[in-house]
Length: 411
Image 1 (cartoon, rainbow, N blue to C red):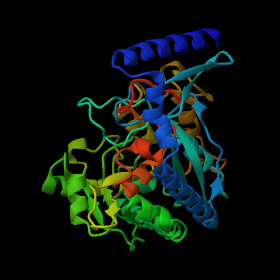
Image 2 (spheres, rainbow, N blue to C red):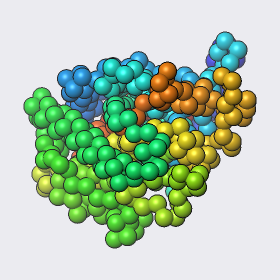
Image 3 (cartoon, rainbow, N blue to C red):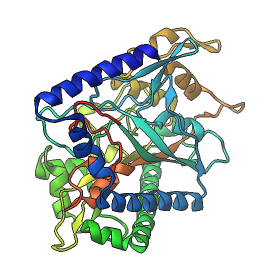
Image 4 (cartoon, rainbow, N blue to C red):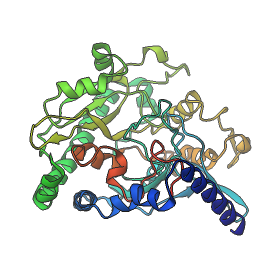
């Protein structure tokens, strides 16, 4: 502890010397980057909206019969993520190494194993050491530590590996039904939240200069492949946002994380689908994007993603192959006589994969089939409140650590 304190103190001393050279004192830096924000009416109004937003999601989820899950911040396994980060922080404790969690994705899956559970939710903490913008610009979406409402729903479809291989028409029908169910679930949650923010925060929204529409359901929905073909890979989200009439809309079928369902992926003979032939209609995941609306002009800002989720891979064999193909692990687990013989080669995934392989006394898989998503709290606030008062994601936080803002975070 003393060594860390000394290292931090020396780093702060060098930082102070650097800003002194630019003509700024430590007091100037604190006033400009922290104090002025903390005491501002803008942050007061944002936090009033935040409180309603988080509370309304909690109300909705409890009313829907979901159970609240404890936060998991340390684990031997964490979300590998489909995008680059600086590194995954680790902590030594009781002689072992634990990782700080990028998300609670694996905890969510495992918590749904109880057969009586309808689903779970948790306002979860996340630590992601995002890379700075290579172009030295404000991207307005990343924070090193942030919170999101994580939600996972049980599907309870009982689709077996045999069904997966030999009854693709029925499996596809079930998956499409569940896509509609989960999309409707999140739409209803956002409708209720928007109603509550309008009811309780009308003056705060007016002071921030924005309008929140209560969206109509179903939200407009666009498949990624078609959007990219029409607008190009770099601009399709913003262009689709211009096309969508509502404030909220879906983009579906994004090749992303290893746990997002791709069907079909495996064939009965052990072969895999040619990945170059995977299309959006084979990828059962989704994003919600939202635009802010200027109260005076009615103009929309470019759309930003606030929620990502999916129907999850639920069968052991596809789970393993997806993890391998996403290069999360180098080898398959070798399970024999109640142990994993190559446990040392699997990082923290060994216990998780063993659980995913387990059967009950009737030979039925214990691992749950689920669907869900995570909605970023700060990201949503930034997306719906952008305007005259909110220009970057820092503006909706007291202590947000935006990698594009400061060389050193003081609080």
